[in-house]
Image (cartoon, rainbow, N blue to C red; front, side, top):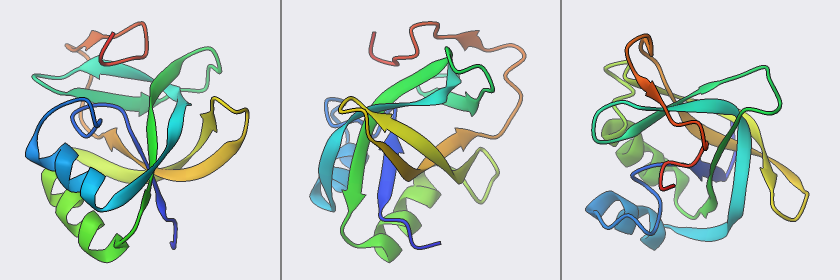
Length: 126
């Protein structure tokens, strides 16, 4: 699939200082704040989101337009543990604060959330 956009909601956010958030910023253009329909949980020292069918359940974050897709997704898939099935990269419809909807990639937690604490605000940073 040839999507250029990535929705981030955790350690890849620009205001979280780490090498991977800097890598993403250097290889993308910020589009804006957005949300998708889902739920977010505190996994360890990072969040994990899952999809929801309840439109009132939202995961808040930011969308970036990726400038070098092949390289960026190779690096981010490794960082997110896609090969180990920790996260999977799927497409969702994200809703920008402008009211526009954009199809974007997002990393969804791919393990059990049974013993994980939900972040009811939908925002990892708040």
